[in-house]
Image 1: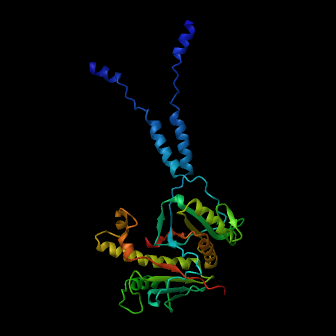
Image 2 (image 1 turned 120 degrees about the vertical axis):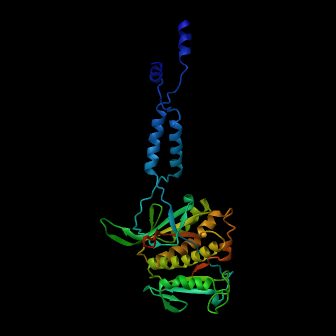
Image 3 (image 1 turned 90 degrees about the vertical axis):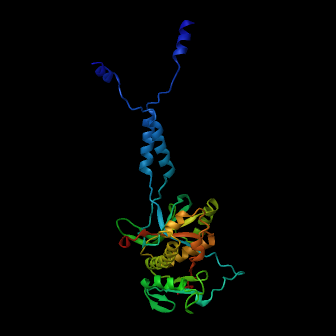
Length: 150
Length: 186
């Protein structure tokens, strides 16, 4: 009988004292990995597929340049345009100064070219030329993994 | 006097921490929702620096240069021979691994250069496929080399490196892919 009373006395409770710590750990993890401002991409970029891919792990080095047909109302697309950050670049020679400024802020800059697969090389070559003038020579042609080869 | 002292003693004030978890949870959920963990994948390249009039580009012997030309119609010219994208990988591998055996290919892996030239109207997709094939050729060479050193593949070898700049395989088989200057105008 004594045993029974003992059982009812012990109130097992999980200590919640460390709960905030656990949550804070998770919170800090997500805060560090978060990229807050995702730009709204105004051009269509369906990336090409490739096999020989490398991952860019250091996301803070990466700057994106989007190239592709401009998205119009509905599903229509217009002429091929270049977008950096939030702005569509009309005059391609502006890329030089924009990228040069980015390079001074981040000397290990990697420019990720997100080019629509239906684009032509002309505009890509033009952007290459501007990047070379700016001195941002590390580039990456953003591509999707080729599903058929897996 | 007695009342005041009593009051002071009582106010051994503690901030209630029970809501701390809730606050942290709210923040956590916010960051969970806004996070994107997708890693950008792509084909890495290094552009040649802006040409300088005083220092001409280093001369490359014709045999060390594998020329790939892709025209506006999407046709591939490999060393002046009509070809296809599928043939590029083998051709690059023979070219790089030649070691001076065949006079049409490179002297040594260190000197071998692959040059890609495109037209303004070349489809970008085809250019990426070409570049992909060239890099896959190098990856296959690196994989073979890594296997001979007792690793499963090149990725395994690279993960095992203490200093990424002391990559023996890449020093032995450097990937030299160059983008040829486009023809001015059409």
